[in-house]
Length: 138
Image (cartoon, rainbow, N blue to C red; front, side):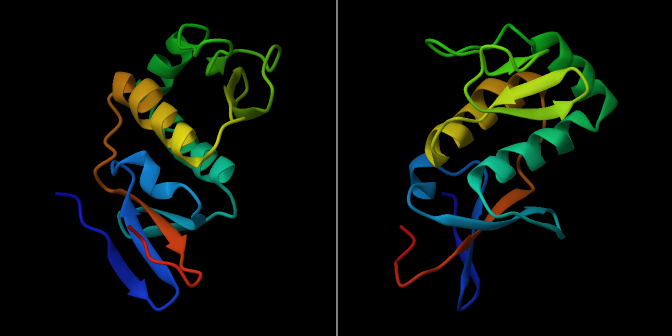
């Protein structure tokens, strides 16, 4: 079972590999790569920061480049060599753009299942820090 933990009275930390629905309605404040903390303000930034980290590894970069144009949803491509035909493209590298026009749960699902898993990126040490605003983390 994947556990969440409270870091202080204002934050909760959930593993990236937790069920994506747990992120719905929550506000991210940071991504943790082991002990390294990268501050973020939106789910789009979470998506971008993690994809850029994956892309920084040469072997993952090569696989991501190969995946461009091959991974798509019903109507939009998730990863491409240009922002054309994307609703809200996010640039990951010179010739790599990711579609980021989705909600929190969908972005996390696309990231973990459709992009990072085929690449072989280890998500086990990646956690998302969430702001607690008078609500329970379930």
